[in-house]
Length: 74
Image 1 (cartoon, helix red, strand yellow):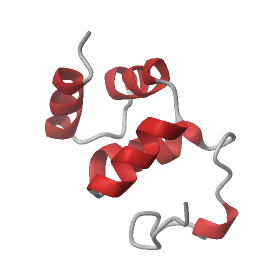
Image 2 (cartoon, helix red, strand yellow):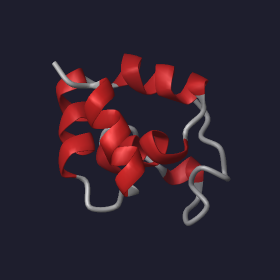
Image 3 (cartoon, one colour):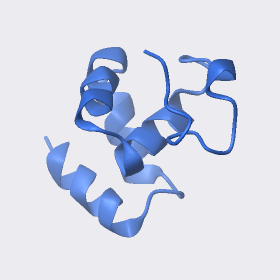
């Protein structure tokens, strides 16, 4: 997937490594991603990793964190 510049406004999206920057990518998609980006994230990363980011992230907005904790709840 090509990352949107507006999703990664603080860096060059072409330099983002899917594996190395997984937490960063997941946080941005959880907070500001489109439906297509959320589907891509779900296919690209394990549910356990997404859940951990949603639960422990220090950068997610509180309302985003609460929403994703409810959505990913087992």
